[in-house]
Length: 468
Image 1 (cartoon, rainbow, N blue to C red):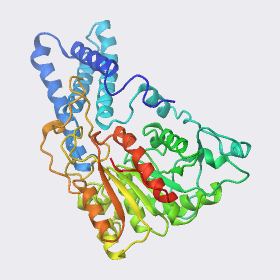
Image 2 (image 1 turned 135 degrees about the vertical axis):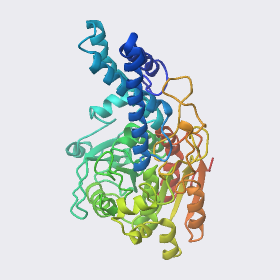
Image 3 (image 1 turned 120 degrees about the vertical axis):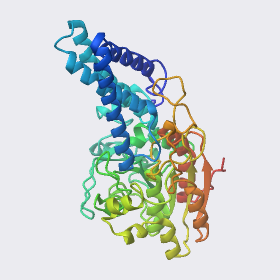
Image 4 (image 1 turned 90 degrees about the vertical axis):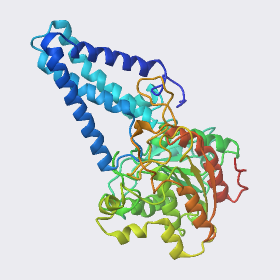
């Protein structure tokens, strides 16, 4: 499966067609004559604008994203509400053709709004990827765990993805199905070799399969393996949230014991079930957006478990809004627990590390990431990465989507440089690379190749690739 092929949901004829059809349908329902044009239409539009303003305000209050949403998102949502009200009021008195259009218009407008959201976050690149994810279709080279013995001591040209149900005995963290990528070298010989392993963590809004469906992680791992005689780390696609929108930031708190799950459930299970190497020198963490924050935190907090990290677009520390919101939502109001997960404070308290290294990929402030470094909610996450102007759902890059004067995000602005500087003071080797692909899954996909190569080099003791 080529995740980069198919009909684009981000640019091209499909989004534009939906936007045009939705606008025409809304016009048919909303426009009229006489008293309706003087009174009914202005009232519907005013109510739609009020609904859009309320949704924007609520989004800002909840700190859902660190950057303002595209203006066109609120335009489509306002039109949806206005059209719905007009359709209800005029349904009985309208002609049958108008009634049919009114039934179709609202769903079309909602689809247009969803397309704008998808363009904003860069989540589903194509129709095919979206359909596979929404229907829970099989992943590339997915293999049942029970079929692995039959593949033992065979030659595999590509790795296999195995769904696993990892017990939560240590953490009590309710989680979804997780996945393990086994490289070709795992299948050679009578028993599995003790390969290094890497936990893979996605963004705030995520499923454990996102790195595979959206980030092409197994394709990247297969390419790495092909260049290294079939050997690559075992990749563990973990569930850090338990549900799609549960922002745990990989900490133990009111939203669940995510940190304990990743350290006390996942790691021992992969070692015992798949024969992965057990010492910290052969374990790492790679994360995107929120997952990047998690990767740094897990490594500096648990050097006895992990020795390498890859942070792609992460923050300075765990956050779920502003400081007060974060302490309340993630730590039940206990500020000392927030300090306990602050990587800079953890490193300062720990002192010198031995054998720990990592790589940062920083997209903040680069073209394609509107508004620079995020907004007051402190959550760059998957927001940003606007697509070319000219589509009715797009804003164009680099201009600060929405133009509402969001302030620089104190949690993400310069986070990579700040953290790497602090790491060097405690003997953690780190590098920072810039990305011009914006804060989207495209950015994560592009960055994973050098990040995986760097982390794998550290875990296997091979020379690291040259920085670009």
